[in-house]
Image (cartoon, rainbow, N blue to C red; front, side, top):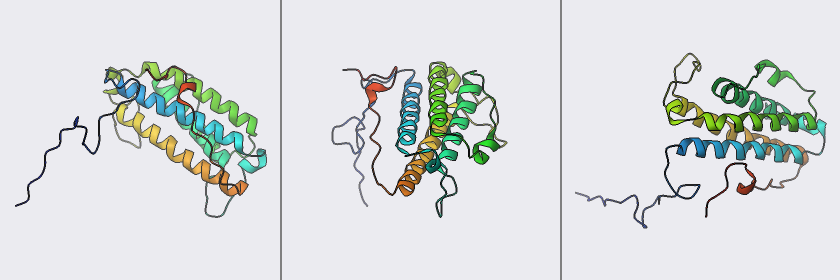
Length: 197
């Protein structure tokens, strides 16, 4: 019979020590702050990636084995976040045209950067509304014919954003032929998410 060692989650030898962002304190709005931080950080990372494309045409350049080019990914990221978070949860006016996210091939680099700035502003306006009460309720609209919790869908949206950010990064590397890494966004540059001492 094998004996299992019990681990105390707070013990310093724990494999997964407790570490929380924003001063290390649990709070009533932990998911709001953590999801908000990740969303805004990744939106800024999308902007930084777009800035590294050398020109408008490179954002739309198809590559073998890649179904969504950089421009398409940016349009889809913006449309997805502005619809589900900004509009549905935050009440920020937005009419999504999902088909255009995948068919438009004319947006310039400057237009995509502006679009991501507008997306950032819509999400920043929505984050304060993500109360625990709201997060524990069902998401206001069904997703693929199913009812999901708002908290689960907010986490899904953050991971969906990160997934497409990775695709954008690889498209940029393939198109430019350069493996230049886009630096991580400085935490101090994300409004409302300064780390506490």
